[in-house]
Amino acid sequence: MLHTKTVWLRAVAPVAVLALALTACGDKKGSAGAQDDKKSNAAADAPKTEKKPADPAGGGELKAGQRGTGKFKEENGKQEITYDVTAEKIHVGTEAEAKKLVSDPKDAKGLVAATAWITYTNKGGGAVKDMPRVGNESEIYADGRRGGLLIGAAEDGPGCEDTIDIENWKVGQSHTICQTYMIPAGTKSVEVHWAGDGQSGTPFVWKFANAG
Image (cartoon, rainbow, N blue to C red):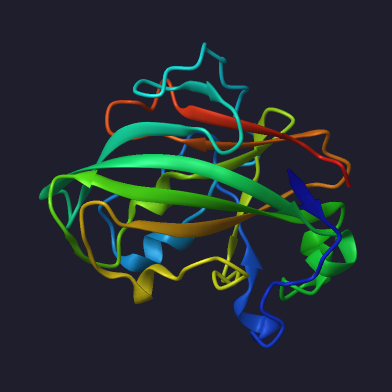
């Protein structure tokens, strides 16, 4: 279910630290970089991703709330963790809200902020000591094109967890990590993409209709 028109992003965050940045299409967010890498840039003009039948263990389209399973290397690539990944819901805000999230309102002209709630469950490979980076691989697409990652967006909306606060993530435990992207206003279809190691060509895709 797509939740819209509700302001919840952190109002007290200084607008000056919020910025919208786009890079050339096709760039991949580093999975083994520093914590700041989760604020790395995403392209707005990536080509449409080919859709494939659902395969919970190998990529393709999944329904909201349906899980996919993939492997991801934590601890700077030294530890391979198997994760169950589930895109639960998406919130799409308004243009007025988006302008308050960037240092220069002109940067948000014609755009809205879309936030995805994604739950990850550690299924094996050991405990993740701290600052998991698995959430870095999640992306939001609007009408088949990748949006722009909102740098400095709050990660502590209702039900969201900040990865800085996640420590000793044991097998069997789940955490919900949110991601916010800027997408064009009036978008009809919003998708969450996530790909584990070796799955970049066949990511998991959860599709949501924009009711806003």
